Length: 420
Image 1 (tube, rainbow, N blue to C red):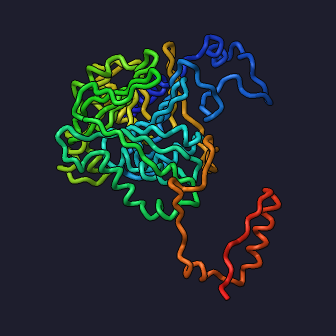
Image 2: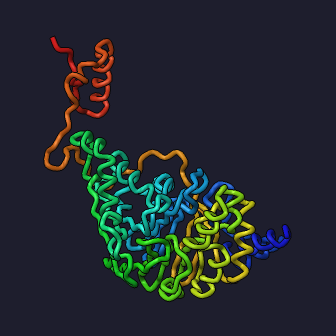
Image 3: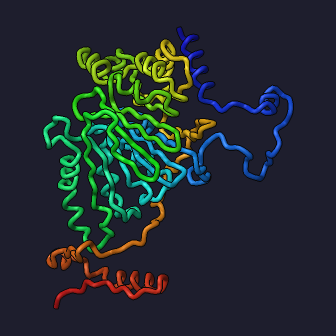
């Protein structure tokens, strides 16, 4: 049994690896040495992706897994989130699950370039970091409002829709919003919500600059969809959570990249996640796609490359997932980890893993910043609080301001003084 698992994993890795050129193959066997390598100069080719170092082609798509995991928190895998970058400069975020903002941030991309967010449904592992990305924008260089597309309508109660969810986020962070006015650039705290009818098939929710994004219903409670992006004759299909369904098989057919959930074996939800058996079988077979079914879906969909995500991808879990998928699917497939990157053109799909910065400072601002809040509002801390300042440190604070002014050629003065 162990031998079968190891063979399955090795086969999966081969399917994900770039093909070697003929001279590379000979070199691997001790033959011809590859040209262009030097002990001091940059390597002529990279097997990993270093964010910000490669120009995206005019007809190229880059997809980055910023969350490939589950609702169970772990530093290795955030919950569902995929960044799609197009050669025309547009960027789209499909789902924004808990923990995924940290991975997006580690890419070093200015946040004003990542303002278009598409949510498949409102479980926390698919939108839990939407509040985080929204509220941290003003402190991390974002000046533009977020644009959020999410499900509503379709017979659901109105207060289940995306507009109601965003209203709740704004209320939850109301203190931070109000007390930031006049001190930070609060334009980033505006949110434009585009609520769409989740029950419609082939519902076009975005159509700009040659990019079309449409939704199809998913079988995962009410208010759940899958997303399909088309651009330059290429197609990216992304499932949120769903059972196998006819909409996906029809509309994702022949996708260049088909990203679909793929759960661990059913018994793992009892042994690893500590679910009761009734909970385990419900979660893994009635509202999600288990690994053998994922394989069958891909066999019916026939994408150029399949991507399995939404499972704890570890050395001791991956073999079972690979073996189960290979029971029903023998095409190209990658088993996602956070930071996995796909570069897609009409001629090629290249899979790598990004080298993420684990200690980033804020990405640069690309929009002129402003301090005054919209409408000229400004929050002022009550005077009685400010008069609680430790006046013994006033001399040091004045010196801090003096040194700052010398360095930046400004004329700021510490405004607090004790009342006589």
